[in-house]
Image (cartoon, rainbow, N blue to C red):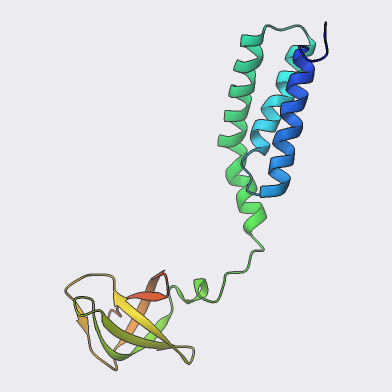
Length: 150
């Protein structure tokens, strides 16, 4: 059998390609398919038919993706520091100028920095001096809502 048509070699090439892609992207996407390709190599080496090799690759990849990816993503992202902007979500800000989505105006200050702000609900205006909670970020604008008063 020619090495170019040997299923073990073909799966090995696929495995290496998937690992190389994962190394360059670091997105935890192709590594699960590499695991499936590894098991397909074993099936090919044992003489399993091509349809079984492909089926095993798909099933193993899906199982790895579904069950281990969330754990791996959580593990790899636990030490990740949030950016300055991400760390603002959930914090309080003070309205500097009226926030009005319809007119496209509004500014807040948080941590001594001024930000353009919009309300999360259209049709709502918030007056200067009011305290708001930052609920998200859209581009360079903070998405805010009035702080609930007890």
